[in-house]
Length: 476
Ligand SMILES: C[S@@+](CC[C@H](N)C(=O)[O-])C[C@H]1O[C@@H](n2cnc3c(N)ncnc32)[C@H](O)[C@@H]1O
Image (cartoon, rainbow, N blue to C red):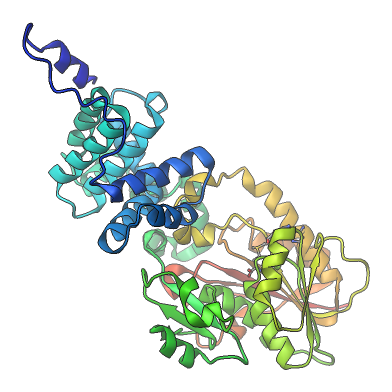
């Protein structure tokens, strides 16, 4: 397109050159929200940073609070989430391929396209503010190009762009849903496979829920504070399913600053994560019930809950974590509890089968928590699966081997991908002395748990992350 250049060439001879603004190399000082959003996208792209870790620091650095902070957050997170959709639209409006486009300019175009397609910011304001941002960072020659691309994007609504660019829903419904909800196709296909028979009715809703900003959930540490008390102190609501859970409004501020969290009576933990740990604790057991194992404990969310429960019953939890610094987080999360933290590989725990209950909260793709990590869906690759699946199987076998006959093992991942969930469990059941229990009975009063025997939670059904849980009884 290069409209900027053609306009330069068409300037009449001897006319005054336009006021040069190319020397404004700093972003406009009066738009700190967009500046922070752009810096966040840059950090995600250049340093593989996590948007939700980088943004709070940038907000502090730029002294952004209130509406400005809310706008920066919406633009940064929204542009990260919607990247695939935004890129397809930008590519359609530009005569340069995305690969040939200056990366920071492309980040700014994503921010502009997001404002045009997914916010109520008036189109002319979105274009003008983004062009200013580009001019401030890359000079006025490039800002003409940005202006032209953004004006084209603004000619259609998001719906109209989806109609123009997405696969035909009659031919490829999953591809269409993936495009429409800005998910990579392989992830939408995994969600569809996990939903099974109801995918045709629920896939749209599942992907849409993945795009919404999640509530923060807290765990009230058993024995220290009740969920009702925690809700009263924090202004949240008792969670619908977990007796120890509290849900806070989205955007309710930094939960780390809440007094009960600072004092260690409460911790930030998705309600689904609480429920999987509780399910393990609820399975009936004959005989001794004092030796519990958490095989993949860092950073310690489930170890805190399990540790509190086993401590009240006079037992002990061994919390195993391979990474030193994550083991430190487990120590801090379980302070005051009867928890022994061990830094070692969970596949290398010796031979004795001593545990009564064991949790394998295995490393996974995290596809079940995409709503909490704005950029994650575009960073994860299908190629990540093979190695993870092998590790998941090995860790599950190790936990089964370390558990006494009659004991119980919970296999948990924060993903609905069948390769990481039902397929790992099926192989363990085939190859070991473990029998799968119907896990649904240990998630009492929860609707829509599917056909069992394992449980798959979903944001669109339960308001939790998409946690998977299978329960296995060891029988030797
Ligand atoms: C999904 S996270 C566990 C989350 C934790 N249960 C919680 O609720 O906070 C998986 C953890 O397993 C650890 N891990 C990875 N490979 C491991 C191994 N071979 N042995 C033990 N831990 C391992 C990772 O460092 C990571 O901290």
